[in-house]
Image (cartoon, rainbow, N blue to C red; front, side, top):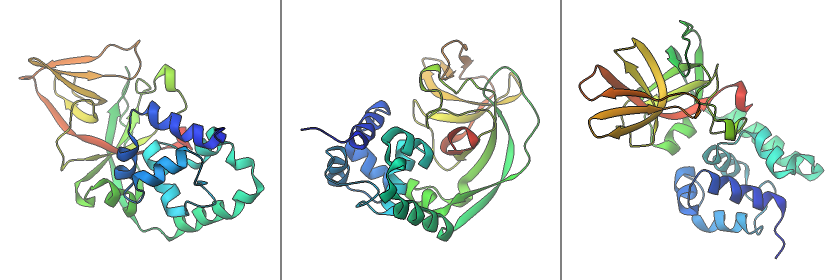
Length: 236
């Protein structure tokens, strides 16, 4: 069976993220596993048959902006997709947003700045789908590029300089989560992937060329929360 390129692209992105079809469905809050399976088998067209709300939820789970989705699948070039794109625009316009101040700059590299100005608006629909209460959201600016992996540069899962990330202070991080943390020894905010290894807490960057930050459990380190949302020009 010859699958359409968009079906192959969706499956490859899901596998790249290490997610099962059921995980994609659960995290979307709108799709079910059968729909994800039918998408990957080319039986449901994502922009003609899926519906704008479900398509938007799928893109969020797969870490794609519309532009990245269009580039990966080639659907942007199809004249018949214009109606679906307009539907997405209308959906965006009708969403209710919560607005948050940027708390501080979180360090993802060797240099740090004090820039922490501005406001960030996040669709309430996204927060509900993630199970995040708006009162538990804190937003930070990303400073540095160590969370942009050489192997996935330009893809949705990278976190780039100038991005804004939202963390959920109401949930404890799990091993492997990207977190924002206060490093008391370095007197800085960090954004890294979190692991506990024996008596140490290790903060791993996405770049293999950048060393991890290793702290003892007794060191003054505070995990602010896991990253649940990210936005910025890097993925736009």
